[in-house]
Image 1: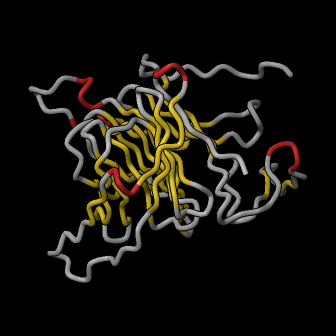
Image 2 (image 1 turned 90 degrees about the vertical axis):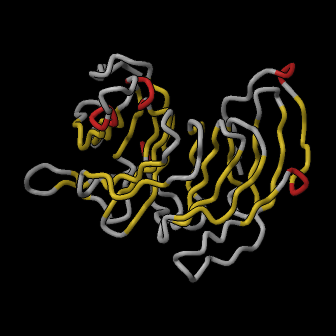
Image 3 (image 1 turned 180 degrees about the vertical axis):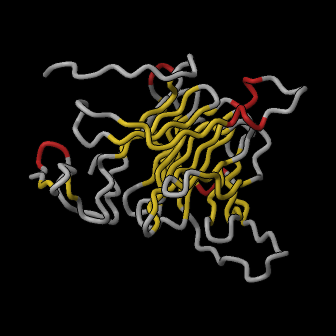
Length: 250
């Protein structure tokens, strides 16, 4: 193993999250070292339409950056930059726009990112069009974690400091289920039917996603509210210290 390249982002802040877009629910082909690459006449790698594993994103400060990592470090091009600080009002502090987390969402002919942080909004970004295409509003405090649904790119899940978690329908741009519980991280089971949460006190809980009906009336909020009784305690661990990440390996 050798260090091929160091990239210094221009925001001068901590990088809070970094993730490749493997798009596993839409593409089952080989990735990484298992890829047998073919090239066109210009020397560009030829990929199947659903293979997005060369795309990597980062969030830090008020910026979301997306890179093309096609040549595994020998070539790293920035594809898109989203700077939330550009929306600052004169009386706002810059750290109110800092981004904390993001998740990838596949759409036909596009790679979409949901990102959020201190302002409590969830910003939906189109990479193909290099622009913000929607803002999901509902949380009243900063966004701590965002997860894409493992089976359906129509849904994303958010965790907020306001003591709620929300399941969002991206087609209607509305929250359809709100879970009332204070945690700081979540992770879907691969089935998409349950998820696990972690808290700052080392508590792991498993939750079941209830059956829901998307409201037909645009004026109807139609939010289903779910309490702690819809979960079960799995374990208290880590000496009641913060659980920072959860991964389910199948």
